[in-house]
Image (cartoon, rainbow, N blue to C red; front, top):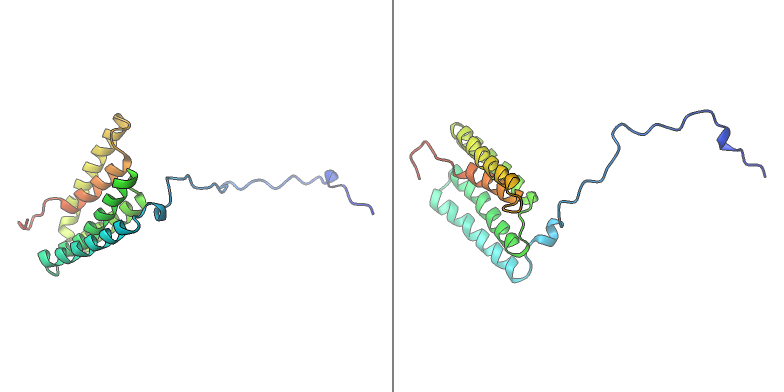
Length: 160
């Protein structure tokens, strides 16, 4: 049986895509491996629920209570992960930061810009510090500083 020889085909090979698919760089272990387990998980859930309830008890049905209901559990989970693994995953930090920003923008539109600028300034300072002094702090610290400052920027309403 004769098989045609493809080497005589004059057409050029297909050109590669201008946007080749590359695997995303690994930024550390998957979140599932970082989350607390066993008794630590129970403690994290209990503390998070307590923080959410305390936020609404302290602030009432107000935007600040919603910020606390997102911010406090995120910080509790981040603290548990940081204690064990010494890192702060962006898969928690970034969604929490966006959620807090959206809550502030929706509930106090006039306060959004000062909160946002304060968060950017502190995050930028921590980023610069981490870049100038490698190993001193990580990028997770810069992200968490930005998130926390955007939540705790001074309020014009006079409430503390």
